[in-house]
Length: 472
Image (cartoon, rainbow, N blue to C red; front, side):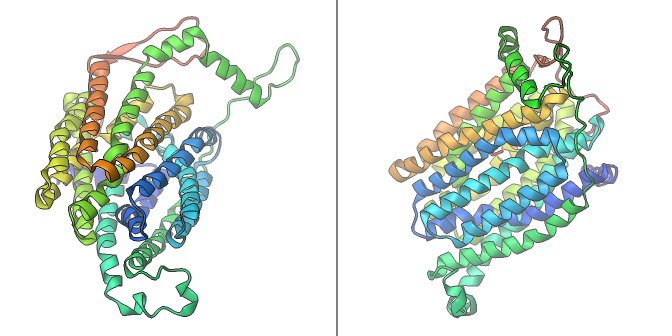
């Protein structure tokens, strides 16, 4: 309780843009929770199998992957307010199409454009919070952002699990719609109840736009355009980008990247994403179609998981201060792995329902700590690009394994996927702990004109006075 009250006091000291951003994320979290519970179930209620669900997720991640790097460039040059408003509107429009369309082609198109818009929201998160905070408050800010989103997602998941049953029991909505609405909604009661529940989610998300419009413009300061000494003219941006790309491909730059913390962190995100793509997108199908839980029960289970994750996330800074950031990430994720295997092989709905929130809470507990740690390893001028790389890897890795998992579920069921996920997670934890548990180096950017390349090392611990965002 004392830790929670400390977070509330800290919230009042955040910069105005940071507070508005947290508020918008909290308001949109309810809608996100509803979609998280229902969308895959909606697709299966239309007659599609897990392989099409995997294809839909794959197309969405392809769209996000294609937009990740343009998003990073835009974030380093444009106002965060403009990007957040436009991308949120695009997600809303694509989401409406995903709810109302019922043919494979339009559903895949909507998933693709949702992925593009979501890439901007995903990539801007960390740089926006960094830009609107000071170092001493960043761990608290990142953790509170995750916790607030998850707490509101709990409400959305509980509401999302119960809404379809309420609509299914109401003849007013299932059987007596006006003729001009019948072509919009599916005639099957189960599918229509999912559609109506997700439309409610869209209405709930509308207030989340209000804080975005209240944001002040935070357009990054642009460095002066370099002057070409030979021609006497300013270099064009594309020439600067070409020069930058050449510097990153120099042999000494590639050696720095290979041994740098940045490369190791990219591999951590890659391995984690590969493992997550095998099981995380299918947990709602696993509970409802495999263990025969009702959507309402799964909403409660997933809501409890997010609620516990929110609480553990708030405790993550406390743990990181005492054992170090890397140790806190590695230990909590390692503790979640026995629970993952028990979930995949128990076959008991009640046992799985009890273990699932614990697994989620431990695995995702230190995501905020990892987000701060990952960006602080990169020089400040290139954090937007670095976050794009992290986000691209986090999107691309599941896009490889998720469609394969859908095919595997149809052919062999769920248990083999849990074993493969265990292997990927173990590899990512071993790499993170082995590379950073002792001394760690700072990434030296080849864009920085320095006479030599060196790695500076220091202990991976939060200062005693320092108070303390993927698919995992």
